[in-house]
Length: 82
View: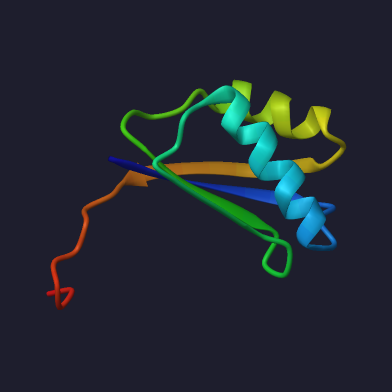
């Protein structure tokens, strides 16, 4: 699994979060997806590393500015997180 964090400028409300999530779902099929307008980020979990340029193009086409995309391996924690 891969955790990808997208730093986005221009999100101001929960509707902006919905627009960003909808755009990301068009590019890849994340297992989990969450956008937060307060922190200006969107986090997604996918089986494989998503195409960064496709993500950037899709999010920017909705009117938001992508400041950065960072992917890292993700390990699911156990019951107690140890």
